Amino acid sequence: MENDRIQFLRQALEAMPDDAFTRYALAVDLANSGQKEEASQHFEHLLTHHPDYSATYYQAGMFFLKQGRREDARKTLAKGIEVMGQQGNSHAQKQLQAALDMLEGYS
Image 1 (cartoon, rainbow, N blue to C red):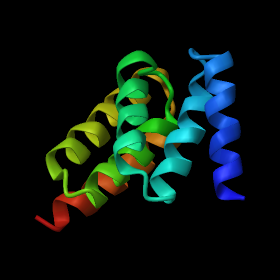
Image 2: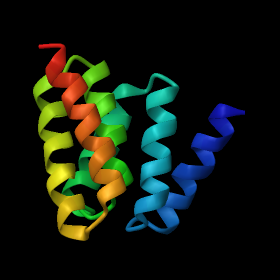
Image 3: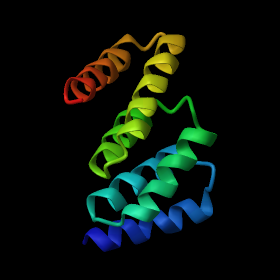
Image 4: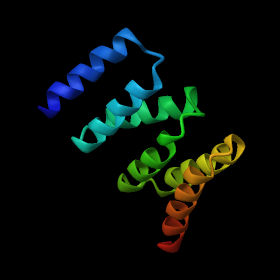
């Protein structure tokens, strides 16, 4: 079933390559299924091409942390805090700050 969902999301992304939600859902599902390289490519694409897509920052930050990419995780969370501040999204900004504080607390 998991592979069916991933396959569906890949097909949807082919039809709508600029759809941030579809790419985000695919990145999360790939990460959860252990397909790290492809998940990383999609997270990085989102961070570069859809910097205003708020959900990416937390998920990508946590993904990078799990991959041992601490500095990438820190930079991603910090950038998300900045972007969410610009958007006035204080709820997301607080969540990202809590994640960054947790990361920095485990230095």
